[in-house]
Length: 217
Image (tube, rainbow, N blue to C red; front, side):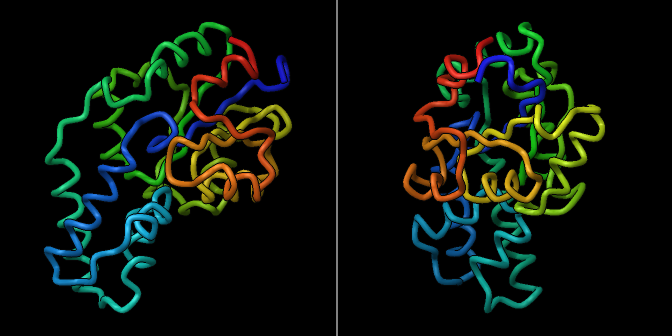
């Protein structure tokens, strides 16, 4: 796959950052705080990658708007109670991103996080200067709608056939399919290799840093 791609679009949580367990815990804490049924671990993992609004709506379909607002508030409060740092990146990810950028790849992020949440995460992990462009769920349609990816491609004046999506969830893989771009899955996050392979990624990696061996850098 060397020399096949110019633009690499990464998901954030579960792909670059080891945050899945924390997100699950925060969703479960929010449910308990609002006297809602606490979701099972996998059910909580299944919504990671969606916008927070869509995740709450999917996990708690019987909740009215007032309860959903409370769930959102409790989730955000719980999530930001923990300080993020560069140590939260999967091992070797920072160095991988530096190497890919030096090799001439255009790097981007497409995430279900809010713009405020992503900016805090980029600053905390020291990665804000490594990405050419980032897009968040509160700026466009939530995954798996392809709008986020297509917006990045347009702004970077890239070609679909030269663009790669790297993600850990079915939402990332479906978004890539919807955008008609190639994808590589990583099984260190929300969904297992068996599930991710149903969406026809080029390959499923155990760790994001294995990407260097696949596309160079």
